[in-house]
Amino acid sequence: MRSVADRLSETVHTAKPRLLAISEARASEKPYADKWSVKEILGHLVDSAANNHQRIVRMQGARDIGVFRYAQAHWVESQKYQTRPWDAIIELWFQYNSHLAHVIGEVDPKTLEHVCDMGYPRPATLAFVIEDYLRHLQHHLAQVFGNRDPREREQWSSRDPEGAPTA
Image 1: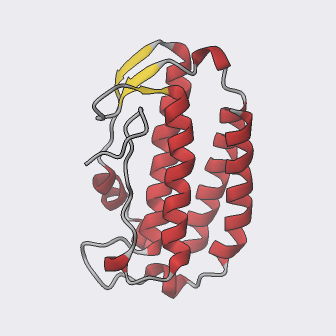
Image 2 (image 1 turned 90 degrees about the vertical axis):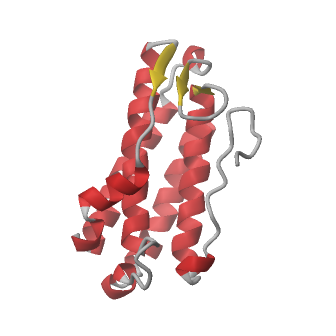
């Protein structure tokens, strides 16, 4: 998983100055109540880091950790990322992902086939969780940097652990 860890580290180090170049006003724009602002997207990526951190660590300690899902919209709404300073969200995201890159780089390769239930048709392996985490982060950064109307942002395309898109 060293290559994924290195790509994650490179991604967050490259993205941080670009994120800091986005103004507080731009990051806070929320023209549609049902679409996340840039602040909320990055906050969602903090939540994703927190949940996947738990998965990655726990999956190394057990062959099957059972069900591990989280309600993304609830996490974003309950933490009120809209009210946080933009630079504070960036720093939290950067530090958490820098640590997660370290954790991923140290994963015991013998545990990569351990599984958890993430709500897909089949259990997800630790290898899948790690690789999909980076793909998910890159997807949302593309939304942040894309400057598209929130209604026209490309939607996340989930993949089940076998690599097939899910409905």
